[in-house]
Structure formats: C-alpha cells, structure tokens
Image (tube, rainbow, N blue to C red):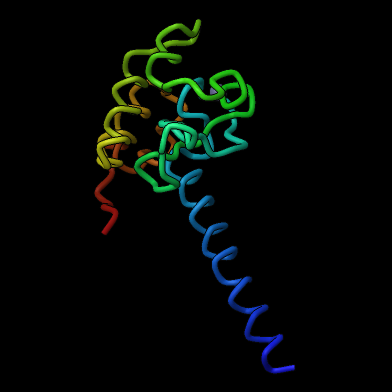
Length: 133
Ligand SMILES: [Zn+2]
C-alpha cells in the first residue's frame, strides 16, 4: 500500500507542477494568444519539439488553437510574418519572450493590444494620489 501511494504521489506532483506552469504562461498575456490576441487555449512551442524545442517558459507561449494548429511544426517567427494579423510589436514581443525578457514581451503586447492595459488602470489615473505599493 505504501509503495503504491509513493508511486502515485510521484506521478501526481510533476503533473500538478506542469499544470501550474501552464497556467502561469497563460497569465502572462492575460490568457490571450501571443500571435493574434484571441483567447489562448493552448501552449505553443516556438521552436517545435520536433526541432529540439524545449518545454521551458522561454520556448512556450500562450496560443489559441487556431494559431497553434496552423503553425504546426514551422518556426513561429517565419510563420507569424505571413499571417494577416501580423503585428511587428507582437513579433518583437515574441522575440523578447524567447530571450527570456518577459517584462519587455508583456509591455510590447500591451502596446499591441490596448485592451490588455486593464492592469495599468491605476497607473493611468495620473491624478490619483494613491499608489500601488
Ligand atoms: Zn491565435
């Protein structure tokens, strides 16, 4: 019984951590696709796994199923350049993301998508004396 329990927990924990990690990826972009801005429903490997891409934050971006499926095993930046919804600010954001500069990536995404500014409301109300500590 004890042995079975131990195996079970060992199986469970990596899955749990993986799920938390996936959630955190989606949270970075406010659950929107890094390519087109629609709701993100999946995690896309920028450098496909088939080409040695790793499942690490720097290589994994939130994407909608449409973008993820359409891109398939292609290099994300090449694929993205050909899309109707191509936005150079998003392209820069993807590049920053790949370099591990998530702060810059998120700023660029905010620039590309004004709706995404929701988090900056406090900052935008310049006349307010209250500050987010
Ligand atoms: Zn998309």
